[in-house]
Structure formats: C-alpha cells, structure tokens
Length: 319
Image (cartoon, rainbow, N blue to C red; front, side):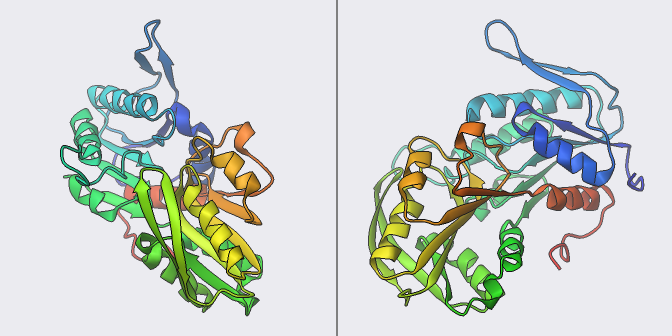
C-alpha cells in the first residue's frame, strides 16, 4: 500500500482500459475501484460509483480510442460523478489521448478539437492529466491543470535492447516523417545507431506518398518509430520504400496502435517483419495478428501514479 500523502488513493477504470487499470492496480497492490459504466436504453452514458470517494485521491484510467466519442463521453461523465461525490483530487489517466491531432487550424474554418476536449475535461472536474506521447506536445498548453506526458520510447528501447539490438552493427533508426525526427533521434542515441528520414507528402488525411529516403539504409536492419499508427499507410509505404532502397529488414514500433480502417490488412501485406506496439489501447482479438507484438505500459503508469500521489518528481523516472 502506498504511503498516504493526500486522501486515500483509489483507481477506477472506464470500459476502454479495464485490463490496463487492473494491471496498474496489481503493481501498486491496490484493488480496482467498484464502478459500473453502462448505457441507458437511448444510448446515454450511465455511471454508478459503488463505493465512497469522499476526500479520496482518485485516478480514472480511460483511453479515448475507438469508439472515440463514446469513450470520451464515458470519461467526462465518470469525472463529473466523482466530482459530485466529493472526491479530493481527480487525475485523468488517459494513456491514449484522442483528438490530439486536431491541435491547430490547418485550413480555414478548421476546429481545434484538442483544446475543446481539454476544456471539457477541466469543466467536468479533472484536476490533473496523465497521458503518454501526445501527438503534439503543444496540447499540454491547452490545459490549465498539470499535465504529465509520459514517453513510450524508453519502454520500446528497453524491449529492443533485450532482443540484442544494441549489439547489431547494421541497425539504422528511421523516422517515418520529419515530425518524428526528435523521437527517432532519441531512439538512435540509445543504440548508438545512425538515423535515416523518409521524406513524404500527405495530399489529404490518411493518405501518404513517399518522396525519398534520406540516409544510408542499404543492407541495414531498419527500425521505424512513430507515436501512433492509424491506418498504417505511413509505416507500410515507408517500409516498402526502405526495402526498395536496399534495406535488409524493416521493423516498426509505436506507442499507440489505433489501427483503424485498412490498417490490419496493410500490415499483413507489408514487407515489415513485425510491428511492436504499447498497450495504451486494448487491441481486440481480431487485430492481434502474428506480426504485432504488444509491450505493456502498466509498470510505468503505476510508477507515475505513485509519484503523483506521493508528490515525488518525474525527472528521474526513466533512469
């Protein structure tokens, strides 16, 4: 049991992240809070918190993945219910934060939906957000409450280190686009490996065309890293471009396996050897194909929750 710093710690789970919440509780030697999240006959969210939370330090674990709007509304109603039940602090643990891609006006009359979601969570009663690998780090500035944005890269790096990637002299880390260069550079530095970049253009949403590959990848084992994989167009076309330019093998990894639309079929047909993903999003059985390898994040989130509860810093978490 954690040392008490605030009120009693309690962890609740929305329907989208029950397995992850249970794993977090096991790391912290806690029991998952009793709560039912269901639907009224017309589809409205129904929440019934079945234990007292008065004065408690409450953590709500819920990713806002598909069905995004349903999971987001569930989260908002849960937070509102906790606030009205006099919870002391309410930390939203949202491993995958939906709508983070809509962080600016890319065209005239576009919404900034990430800011809207931030406002909704704060209005509902959230006093802190704990998440992982926000698609855009500027989303943290949309909140007027503390935001802790964990990094998935060190978990992936540790996983690949156990598989001997540190001893592979032909390893090259590849950024699938310019936006992922900083993340890819951090991974490359972990393995003292060179960095390559795929130059691409995106004529419209979820459509990517490879332009060229910047860097030497001939005869190399290429490790592509991204924050999320949605329709898998970027990674699969990137893998094809790498193989066409002489790469020996392509392995992909990401923090958030959204895998919508044709993603699974594309991954099956891709020249990628495998794709390693974190379990910030619970994959249904039909998406658990042989090429996809899942790495858990529960231990890192458990440590983060403990540090929030006991007011310890995050600065040395990854050491």
